[in-house]
Image (cartoon, rainbow, N blue to C red):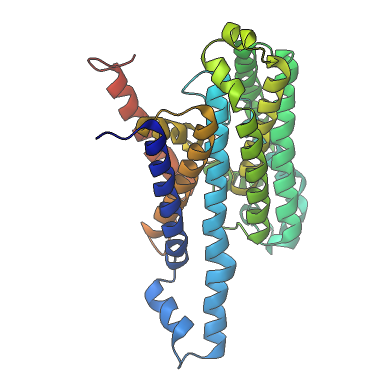
Length: 358
């Protein structure tokens, strides 16, 4: 007997929650120091207090917040991807479509260029600015995070100004592409004029969860809950837009203000994730696709399932990035790009084949 859509949705949600609960303890075990070395240090009676304290610090202050931070960032990107695809009625839309990624990159490039003179005081020597992007120094971290978030928000506002509001989806889409290209050019120009910032900027562009702390986790978790509630409250608009704008108007939906609210949710979720972890590709694009491949649900349920799917994807990718070539690490953004790009190529091949959708 086949399951109903609601039952499949519940089973998928339960599977994603169980996967999340499994990934958290796994995240504390994978790293440059393996579990076989951590376990005796944590629980052996013969371990010296200093070794036990160091082991707990590795688990509690580094690996656990990193794993939870990857989960929260993935949840934000998965939610933003579902909102973007519903808002633009385009299954290939991603959270960075309104120029937020280019704006965040420009903000970080400007901050690095301005802090170039003081890089030696923070990082230890001139030319070690590459460590700034995810530096443990809280002033530097706060400045770069704020610059990334401000750049992402300003880019979205510029996109809205060029599109003259949110009334026309196609104009909004084109404005986002134009803003992304222009801001990307300015970022390249700044890096050309400030070559010392290039290595640090590369770390941001490749994405990393390596220096996410408890403060970042709490911030991303709070923003995710806020955006999830807002997106769920606005899901009826996306359901109406899926039937066409004329149908949405006939249902009595005030599209202009509700679109503006959805754009705000998209910008806040994307800007927060990018500010904490850098640019991580394909998670926001692939998560809603993977949910729809299992079950077709209204946008109200899709938001939650896409969030959980994005969280599991990024947490799993972070584990692979740490474990594949341990004790070295791969940039998690590179890993998600390779895996996500492969998935999209497979999806396009399936849809363009005999009996496909394209």
